[in-house]
Structure formats: C-alpha cells, structure tokens
Image (cartoon, rainbow, N blue to C red; front, side, top):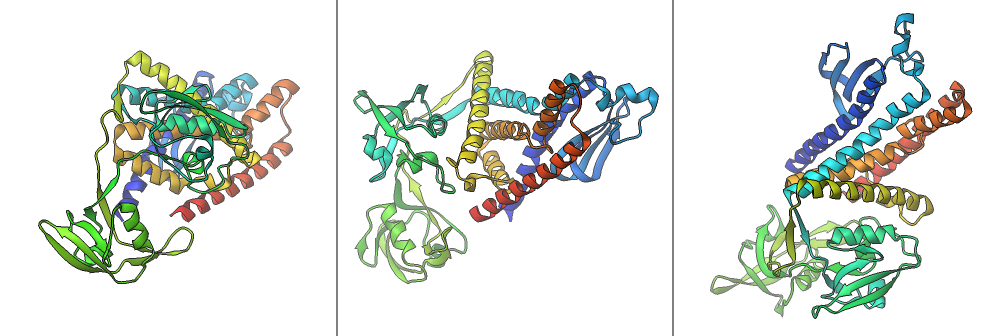
Length: 450
C-alpha cells in the first residue's frame, strides 16, 4: 500500500511539473502574441483551487491530474464581440498560431536542458561500463567481447557509462554491425565488430545490453542474508539476517545463483537449510512459497536479499560540473534524447522495436516513485527524460496533439487558406481513436509488467 501511495504521489508531482511547463509554453507565447487567455488549468474535471489575475485569466488546479490545457479566446468555440476579435486565437496570423502551438513542446525541451544542467551541477554518480559476463552463444560472444573488458567506444560515440552504451546501441538499430572498442585489464584496446543485423528490441522488459548478451559487472552477492521480507517463507522458517546459507538438503551451496536456482525449482516443497549462525550450524526447514512469474510458470520464492560485496576502487565515480559546462552538457544530452526518441518512434513503425516496450501512466508512476526514492539527481534525470518524451509525443502529427495542429497550420501557410472544418473534424476523430488505442495498449503493457 505504501509503495502504491508513494508511486502515486511521485507521479502526480512529476506530471504536475511537466504539464505546467508544457502549458506555460503555450500560455506565455499566446500572451506575447496578443491572444486573450481565458483559463490555465492543471488537471481536468472539477476545480479544486481557482483564482483570477488582472487580465481576467482563470487559473485552475483540477481533480484529475492527467494533463492540462490553456483555453484561449477563439471565435470557433466562443461568441466573441467585435471589440475583442483582435484578441482571439483564430484572428492571429498563421505564423503566430504556429508559434503558440509549438511553444508547448519547446518548453518541455528547454525544461529538460535546465533539469539536466542542474543534475550535472549537483553531481552525477556513474558506474564504469565494465563487462561482468557474456551470455553463451550471444552476439556479444560471437564478436569476441570478454568479461572484465571496459567498453570505451561504440561507433563514433565515446562511452563513459552504461547509459551511454545503451543509447549508442539503440541509435544503431537497423545497422548491419557496429564497432565496439574495448579496453582490457592491461589497458590494451581492441575493436570488436558486433553483428546487429536483424537485431530487434522485441522482448518486453529485456534491456538492449541483455538482448545482445552483455551483462554489466556488478559486485557478487554473498550467501549471507541481509534482509528478510515479512510473511515470507524465510520469515516463517525463522531465517535471520546475518545467517550464512551453506547447504540445502545436504548439498553444499557455493553461490547465490545456485541457491536461487534451487529455490525457484522447489515451489511449495520442504527443504532443509544448513545455516551458519554466529559460531554454530543451525538446521532449518524451509518451504519456498509458490508464485507465478511473468510467463505464468510456478516458481519458488524465499523472500530474502543477500549481503553484496563492495564495489572495486574506481568503478563508481561522481562527477561535478560548473554552471557553463553543465548547460553545454544539458543541451547536448537533451538533443541526444530528442534524436533517440524520434529514432525509437521510427523503429516502432518499422518493427525494430516491439510495441511491447510502450509504457503508459502506470509505468511512469513506478519510474517516478523509484527515481524519487533514489534522490534529487535521479528525479531530475527522470523529469528530463519524460519531459523530452512528452515534447516529442506532442509533436506527432495526430490532429488531437500539438503536432496535428501544426500540420494543419503549415498546410495553411503554403495553401494560403485554412484546412476545411470538415477535414479537421474528421482528422480529430481519427486522431482521438488512435490516441485512445495507444493509451489502452500502453496500459495493457503496464498491467502485464505488474
């Protein structure tokens, strides 16, 4: 219940910030263009709080926090007196209308720049992209990528973090191959040609690195218990934090992975654990609880987390930047996110990326809650990513989105006359249906992940 409320609160906070930024872009440019703004609303439905300014604009915080809008004086919607006609949206030049509509997505991109700049000034913690293991028979193994090698370049992109590596690989989707430069423990550099011909992101929740067979280095989990979940099989068996699991049914356990495999294959079956507790050996009867995994298979779950070894020196670093460098990095990273977002839309259309990877409000809520838990830096990075995605999504040429309005106004700019009301109305209906379909599909994916 706490996780649900935490994620919900984080979602409302994140969406509230991003919607306010987006709608303020429309609002500010509309005011500058001489359009009368009737209402600035964050959320839909019943107003919870409202007030007016000296321009008689009504500001509203509404009950349903799933978006917002700026209502402008418009003769197509309202009755406008002759003396106020010059203040209506539809009376402005097509260039002014384009600027007003484009200002929303542009505000999201500008916000992302400042959010990322703030993140870089606070300090970004990153993990050195060292390969932990390579899956047998994978594309990475065939390329000759080995454990303990550090990835320093993919294509023409320098790689300093695993995020850099992921973005560079995703940008290479559709290529036949990509050059991966690695450095071994003796600081010898080699270039490996990674075959990505036909590579697709077609599995839900499988990261790009994993689909290529690359497992990032992580400190090993020990066999010492760190935490125990309430009401779990481990709690029922009186397993305690600090216990070291040394054998199951008389068979010696040498790794956490081995223990996990035994537990997963023993749903609802009684097991005898030999654990070292302080200076004595205890025998405990444990029955892993059976639960269905994402594929519907019954697996055993113990309900413990292990003590993990510490990171080697130099593997984690925190980088701080000055204001000017942070702004430069904010601009370049925002541009990279925008380019990657458009690439991913193209890859969704061509099938290089499966629609299973689409995420909706539930996925965003979980991401928001997780990022808030990790602190300010993670939350700023999350806000920047979602802000860019919101801006790019709104630029899609669907008539119910900003991109659809821009499409009509650009056509008007070249035709010297507006698109007919009938055509626009038909487009809005089709766009609304497509948007509803995408939302439902994304929600279905979210529920599947849960």
